[in-house]
Amino acid sequence: MKRRQNIANKTIALLLAMQLFLIGLQAKTRIDQGNSTIETLIWMIQQYIPVLVKVKRLDG
Image 1 (spheres, helix red, strand yellow):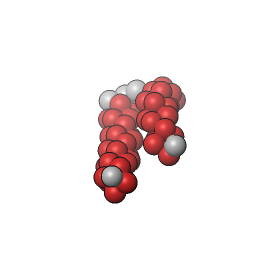
Image 2: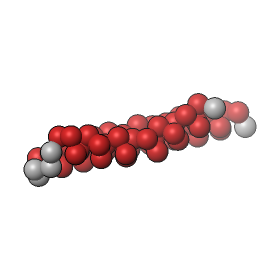
Image 3: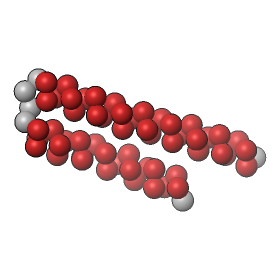
Image 4: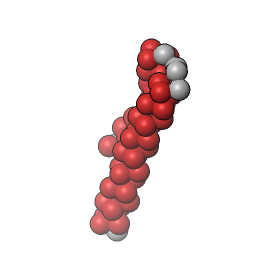
């Protein structure tokens, strides 16, 4: 049971890391489309916070 939980936690951590990576790619696209850097940075922070909260819950 503990091994299954460990695998699940590692899978969730990998998916959250991928989500952060995709947010970064989206931010680059926003900048390339003409959004200001500051506006994009604010958007990124708003996207990152929920993901980081999930990571913290995983950490326990």
